[in-house]
Image (cartoon, rainbow, N blue to C red; front, side, top):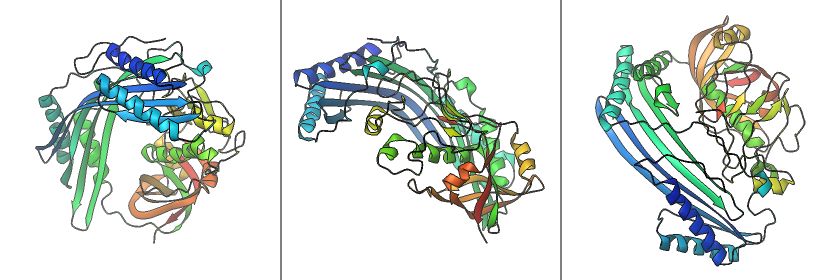
Length: 451
């Protein structure tokens, strides 16, 4: 069994304590007749502060704990969970899972991940950077952030608040066929939301920063100023005229568009025949300049993980190469349903990166000439079966390669198949604040509905 060393932290149980809980689960499951079993124990601590108009609104000390148990009687599965780690509760949780399994139907796809796919050599990804942040320091940072926003421009009329948070989590996962691994990581963040204008012309916008280590965060002043500048520049928004035009999604909005693609290649949608990209493996889905690669072992990145939620080793892999779909997003269950092999994506993708092109944001504006920049999207608006896409949006018109009037209460629409094929360029302005990393995306021939 492989158990990486995790440093002691006063706010969390030790790794050894969680390992003992996992071992108890596996032993109890064996004793109750299960042919195989798995257990995951998660614990976390955190501090979050929210201020508004110079006053503390919320202050939360968080301490989370959860035990998840999965047992198998042949191909019959039962699961149960608990937040009580006492020996009696663990036995009761395993018993509940076993009871459920005895009444479920056989499913040949159920079972633990194949032992050949499990992580053996677990790399240190440098994900654990605790922040010794006191309550007073958190409040001061949040107040500084909000004050910077309110002082940026006289047109900032109100605040919805600023927040600071820090958290640290430890997870131990083990299976009856010999895997035992742990991960520990931190995540720190800061955000600010403000309102510009008065009366009928009021606009709201935000900014945030998030990182594994506190030193990588933007300063409170920078976050506040950015939120204010974004809100002010939206004043005077109007509807755009209806028509077809190039649309440039800024990175925060572009991540959602990539999310629709990931939903279409996710195993659970594929085996249910609920994807417009069903049976598209090896086919051209994007233009030849588009490449998407998972980099799960990037040090300190938010989407990094040495193994997935089933203990399967993660590895760098190309999902889209030269616009051609080269892989799906599969866990063990969906892979078996499709007659394929897990891709190590139980729990999601790990630092999926859309390779940038050569143009920065201003370069993309000049390249498009005239069109629309989308800075905010509202609603879900995508049919995973047909690919039909329609979402509320706000942003800016583009004239002569430069930002022009702000627009709101518009809709961007099309079919995702066509939109993906019409992806003209990927910007160099990559946003790394999540598991999907992408720059701005410039698409041709998108329907914009307004006046």
